[in-house]
Amino acid sequence: NHVKTLIGKKVLVTAGPTIEPLDPVRYFSNYSSGKMGFALAEAAALAGAEVTLISGPVSLPTPPQVRRIDIVQAEEMKEEVLQALPQMDVIIKSAAVADYRPQKIYHQKMKKVQEELTVILEKTPDIATEVGKRKLAHQLLVGFAAETQDVETYALGKLKKKGMDLIVANNVAEPGAGFGIDTNIVTVYDQEGVVKAFPKMSKKELAVELITLIGDRLHGK
Ligand code: C5P
Image (cartoon, rainbow, N blue to C red; front, side, top):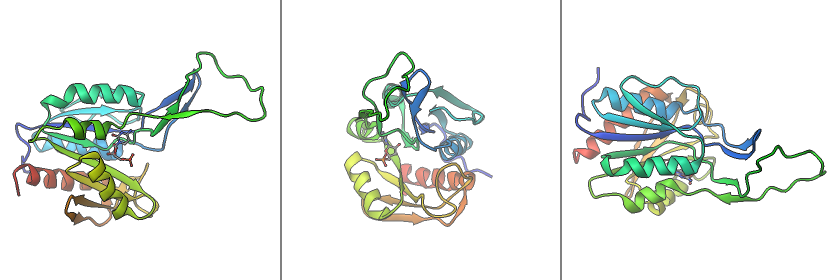
């Protein structure tokens, strides 16, 4: 029974991992399943928002009433996000963007000739930071932080550094939180500190809670 808190609002959600190729058959990536982001897109649509979902490679069906854009690399995700950004009211960055990519992509399969192989990685663009810089006064930027220690310190650091309004932090080392699984345990922070700590719940239930919280923020509550 959803309260239509986001009627007339445009919401952008990023989800899933990015894949950074090394050669035609190999890549660098991470364990993100896209479940949290897809659940958020679904909950936002149910709350009445017009939802755009920009997703890395995942094996999940597109939620009803959601416009989906598939990308592979961080660079492509950045382009799609920045193109969509001016129209958006809320930007939820739940994607696990790869932090590094191979500096050089080989166009032929690398052969197994050396005993040791060194691959030079370079930083990918930080999309959230870019959004934080360009954000308009009415736009709400919500980020995620997956940590394995000192969750609050790192989460608040990221919120400030990246210009986010809210950050959803989880300790991925905790049983019941993090990558791949159906449940999560998160605490939401703003500039001032803790907004709300949620107990362990399914990512679908949590998505509804987070969308409600975001709706309240938009309406100045
Ligand atoms: O720094 P870290 O990757 O932990 O930051 C997490 C937040 O920043 C997430 O919201 C994630 O989607 C976003 N991010 C991004 N671009 C990157 C890395 C992270 O937008 N290259």
